[in-house]
Length: 341
Ligand SMILES: Cc1cc2nc3c(=O)[nH]c(=O)nc-3n(C[C@H](O)[C@H](O)[C@H](O)COP(=O)(O)O)c2cc1C
Image 1 (spheres, helix red, strand yellow):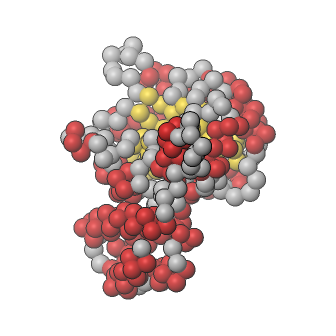
Image 2 (cartoon, rainbow, N blue to C red):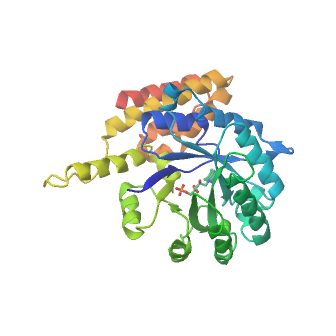
Image 3 (cartoon, rainbow, N blue to C red):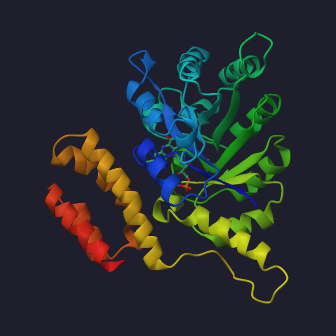
């Protein structure tokens, strides 16, 4: 069975979203937090605070409802890399993901994310730092690192030039989104390059990109037996039950292996789905009401929850949610949705 990892999406998979998802839908082996970055020479406070919401440093009883969260950093130099890792280590994190895939011009133009992929020298220097921090030789506790990357900013040659360096670095996994930075999140996925990377990569490999159904996950599992997992972003935002349905489908298969009654998958009913969606929303809504002030601030935080859910709820209600300018209008739409479940 493949591991299911929840991809980081800045503005969507916030700390409270991750916590609520783990509590209500589950099925995810680890959540990757959106990147922590340098702002005005320091790690961005807002990102650090958000990590606390789903941070594993809680009492044992609380820990059970918190799925594993891996923080992520984005950096353009060893200096930035060190400042960010130090801030996370100070907060007790022991595993960190390094972003070499973000295609947003704000980051790429500053030589970060996929803008770093063509700079083998800087990547080598950062990987040397990872080597140091992954060992106990300097008397400090070892930190585990993973990398999330694309094939390149302009050409897949960039990833293949880096692969020997990455292969020599003690990474726990590489997640590959087989597109170029210039494509952002659209256009064809380059499976040919993915397969080459898959055969040459010596680390556990995770596939990321456009997965939105259980059958697609099963297809990946069958086509790439060495694959460790799939990382899913928009597909899980659109169907938060996806990971649990894949896991339940596998459990059903194992349970019914010797009978003729093999259930195809672990799909949940639409009414159960809507019920769970409302429960998850309630957690996020209450958190927003406690954390922010005024209708517009609260609304801007809760409306993003619905953005990818358009196909999963009635069109009329989706429009009402999106258009609501007052909290009372928003709540009316939620009550209407509750009536349908
Ligand atoms: C709005 C948005 C924000 C994102 N933020 C991050 C981020 O902070 N870190 C990261 O590694 N990837 C980020 N991504 C990329 C996703 O993690 C993922 O790689 C991408 O959506 C492709 O996977 P999917 O097709 O399963 O959604 C972001 C993508 C979008 C659309």
